[in-house]
Image (cartoon, rainbow, N blue to C red; front, top):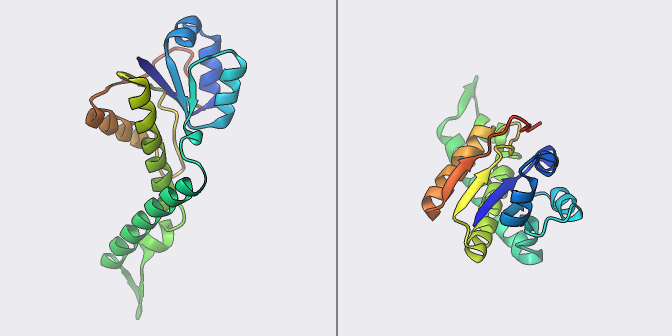
Length: 171
């Protein structure tokens, strides 16, 4: 089965308005990490829509987040200690002090998406993941997430494609 991974509402709207709508609506699985996209597509009568937000609930979700956050936070602290900056007689861990709030959270979120995808892909026997290349953050670009998904699909032995369309917008 083919699966589309959509992370931007504009792309979901474009899919719904496209000429491929019927093909996608009835023959493909749509995976999203955003509840608003899930609700929009369900309202438009898409039957095969899965929101990754539902895969881990409550304590299990919190435990997974804390585990991944702590791992990356400690890694960032260790790297920062190896590359301290000295200003007069003070040593600063500038790497950790600059990125300690955002990067561990982004790492935990990325791991959450990949862990959730594991169960969706195995349950639905996905053979090809079509990615809209619409996931990004101030620190992590679209190309970063593209590389993550390329690595993930290669490891899972799933075909990987970037969705290309003249109507495709990501912002």
